[in-house]
Length: 317
Image (cartoon, rainbow, N blue to C red; front, top):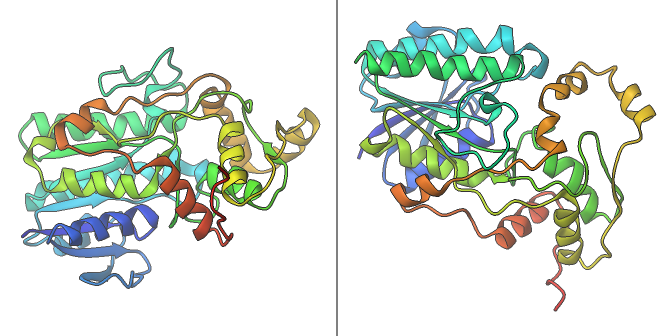
């Protein structure tokens, strides 16, 4: 049995903690607020993730540090992420704990086919460059023998436990389709195939990487179901709750223009390519190496609809 410190008490941090406990490990879940996760076997602590000394104090005797932090301001990643990443790396180096970082696919930039862990990092904007640099710095430290690092990469995620406004699929597609409302997309077309990662599967992989020495020194993709379009997801949700499939459309250009008063909406320009063309995650390497599979799609969707507070009717035959 090992001891692991998970920093970040959002949905991914809590899912990671649950899976680590299920594997028989001790877990300390730390956050700025010191939120008690109310998960049996998980202790809580208060920490500022940009303070390497405070992090190192929490890490005494720990096997790994899991970075499940998510800066709250999407438009300030360039300012907010680097000090957090540097602090995590420094604390891991000082204590000998392995560093597991929860990441995404921004670093790859626009692609012409399914993304694997060997797809070159070619970010096309600020957020992608931030993520790519975080991994480059961590990997350089690993190769220099100063620390053990690994990174998991997920596509846009959905599922129970997602913080408000962090899951496009939860808020813009699933929740609206479950109510029988039209689905309006702020970016991209309704018929573009897209990989959607289930939040609990992110936690499952983070726990696996933290407890398996085969993880160190490379990145891994979270096991993810086959890609689906927003129109397909909306129709599946409608069937679950016994409704007709809703209309799914991109917001008209004038409405999108008005929405750009929001800094967060403007930041979506950088990742629009993910929704204008097929965006497909290949997770075969992770599945083979760790014997992990994505949660069954129907189960994941049903659990998400139920968590969002909608009654789920049996699927129509």
